[in-house]
Image (cartoon, rainbow, N blue to C red; front, top):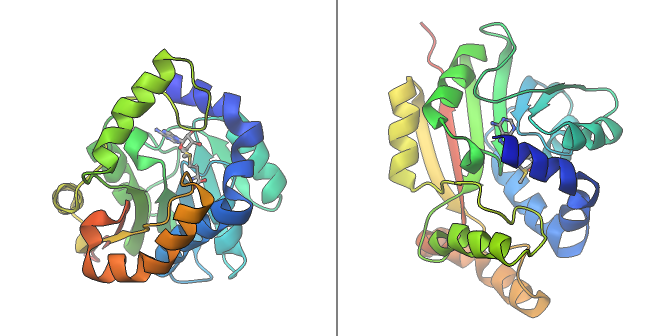
Length: 238
Ligand SMILES: C[S@@+](CC[C@H](N)C(=O)[O-])C[C@H]1O[C@@H](n2cnc3c(N)ncnc32)[C@H](O)[C@@H]1O
């Protein structure tokens, strides 16, 4: 975890260049829409691995309030600039510093792959949610294309390629089935898991444009090619 924290502290100043303009913004808007679609507006949410607050900004634009938590102090610093009215905490999603039943909903985007003990984080999410509260999580899924990414990132680290997310972080990309087992094993109900995104921020522009055009078709008809997994689940009422 220390290595992930150090990495995001180092890239915090450049992180938004990737997701805050042109195709990065289109990519991020796309995955945010999937997560926003799972959440009620106007609620009180926790964003785990909130980074620079890109998702929180989008959520808050619909009303409601949010707290962000992230292990990287550097990312949190940027998030405070982006969402000055919100509260942010430097901390670990696997040990949430909040009382049980605090939040209406929990969101987490592009962070779950780094978590070493996913069952521990999910039981923490379960604990801090109010009964009837919802988790909406978006993380890179495992498919033929993405299964090569951690190995490529490891090579990137060896040959000293600098880039956001590039490194040997022991990341885990989930299949739909793994995600369902994890969520149901924690006690969540109404678990839905679907794939989204075919146009990836890292693609060269012409490929990105083509991928965007076929994205709705891929998501609907060939979801195995889509990169991200978007999972939603409810903490049942007693
Ligand atoms: C790719 S960034 C995503 C940031 C933000 N959610 C977004 O969508 O832009 C991954 C973030 O997860 C954070 N992170 C990784 N492991 C974490 C953990 N165990 N607890 C809290 N944050 C974590 C990192 O520090 C980093 O800010």
